[in-house]
Length: 271
Image 1 (cartoon, rainbow, N blue to C red):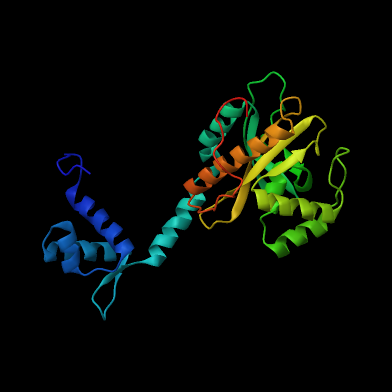
Image 2 (image 1 turned 120 degrees about the vertical axis):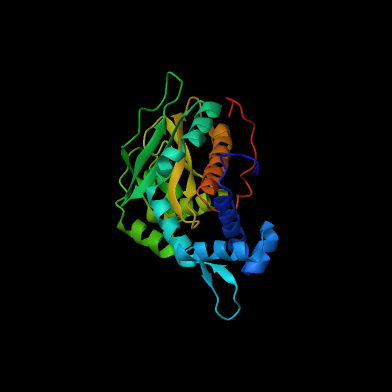
């Protein structure tokens, strides 16, 4: 940060720098002064100001100042509640759509269905219709399987036990054990597939989106006609969707581990 910028409030700048230092380790007024290049009394006043606003706390035994977890977590909860993350995903969806040419979307779990909360259409003449706001059964949609595959075991089993696996097409999974086996494959490869299970002639792939707690909160998906998405292309698209879903998850504070199958792929419309 330029120190000679006339728009910078130096006292506030030092306070924020102090907060960043204390977030990494406990500190005394003298140590803070040495780090910031100011005298001890000025550093002490900064610490007192941060403490008055609840950002730091003083350990009475060591006389060191530490970050206030209560304040930081409270602010994080407020910020997390106000951020509309489906809209934040649009740049990643746009990249997915632009580099594959197919329709892309994001969906969240609601009961035994998924609801599409963001959607960008394909540029192609033959494509799937608008999905925003629509609902689909979790067991027959790629986005649904991408979410429930990563639920805690008991939660996943409870959901599967309550499903009525009605056939939507000749390829729909209608047996619980087959669905469990499919979900295990989703976990192994990092993305899910809807191979004409909802509509004949339409294939979809999806990958999970995680939040700052590393929990799966949604899925990013891609849909297109079987005339353009054959079995070979489906695998490449799955890897690409997984890569972008991981990148978007990291922007939300997640720290997902990439799957071994999820590697860089050629970024062209032949995906």
